[in-house]
Image 1 (cartoon, helix red, strand yellow):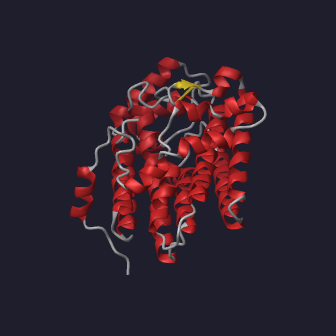
Image 2 (cartoon, rainbow, N blue to C red; image 1 turned 60 degrees about the vertical axis):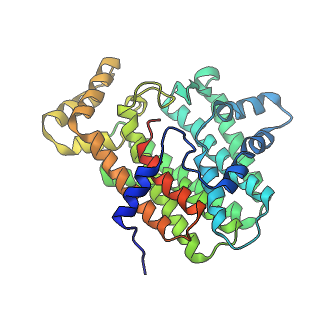
Length: 345
């Protein structure tokens, strides 16, 4: 029987979570101790005989980041019944983070992004070829790490990478498409973003020999959390103060990647939607056009509407987490559902 999280419990979890510290949600001390070793594992994972290749591989690792996906893997490993192999856990967590960073390098090339995590992107600094090479290198390193842990984990990584590639392809096909529909957008987000949140939850469960019931609850949690993060990211791309995201506000909009607020505003119809569509369909919109589009979106109510969708997915994630055994790992997952939609960067 499906256990639904009481509304009062959702409110208590959300009210209790501090969001200033990006890792404040991680209240499991065992996981915090494991997580503290991750950067060392990542450094060893990208080390190679070619110093230049190692340097470009470390570019975004050194810039910092939330590292949510490896943290999710470690938290999820707290629900199993088996004895954990600590080195295997570290390798799997590092592989997940390297896979994520590889996608960021490739995304920045496709989106022509000049800034990521507050530093110039590899493509802006060294060119597209270097950025693509770095992404491919990290994907190879991630594959090697998981392949050493068994066929099943390698298969999960392959499925995750395939889902990401299909999501990216569909997103590219819909670049600058003002007729793109919200439902189609959500299917792309499920492939491109949610899949990479579900993956570490499943891997953590597998490494700890968690039950099928726990594994399924964690998978549902990861998918819903990923959707919440994507919807919140789309809102922040329009509304965040420049610099808070570590990239330019409105970057996705400028590159024709129309997120949830844009699609919601266009679907409303009326004068605002008509003006927004006219701006987006110009052959060569300039910075003034982009700024005007952002203001229209902020005035249209589309940003709060996108955040409400993010909050709905966050609630679904909280309900899935509530089905897990109580304890510090579950509390961490519950707090993370709040952070997903309350962060400002």
